Image (spheres, rainbow, N blue to C red):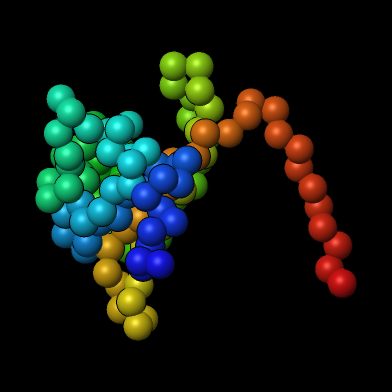
Length: 114
């Protein structure tokens, strides 16, 4: 099995960029969701894909290597957005954004430690 083959058809959007914001990888869902005029965004800068004030916030998160987690609603769909730095051998290599469609009402469980 090829490395990372599972992510290609994963039902959530996965976008990976380097430390400069250049988009390195997008799975099928991300490509479909974020494509401009049907063109791939791989090779473009992730910051150019965000309007202000989101662009400035993402740039700051990337510079400080901090994660950002929130939910949004757009076109009647609720999503969890998870933006976080990624590392290779302990070295900061860029940012990953996961965009997952979630139900409006979700169960929440508190698990006891065993």
